[in-house]
Length: 78
Image 1 (tube, rainbow, N blue to C red):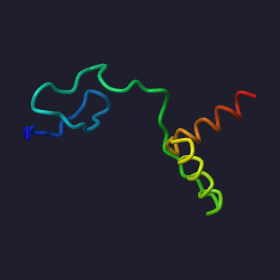
Image 2: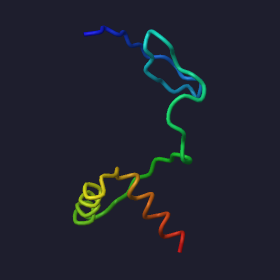
Image 3: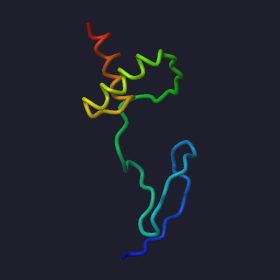
């Protein structure tokens, strides 16, 4: 087993914390490219709707965020 040490460091962007291996480090432009602006929202639905949403996520093998994003995109594309 290879023992790699991990430390937490501050990224260049907005003071966010990130995990850094002892070799290498946080690099500008590294990682997944963003698809837009992230905003936190709270959504109240009935238990029945939450269950339907979760079932659809499982069927489509997507995250809740991705499914809701696709629903919103479909609504506004019409």
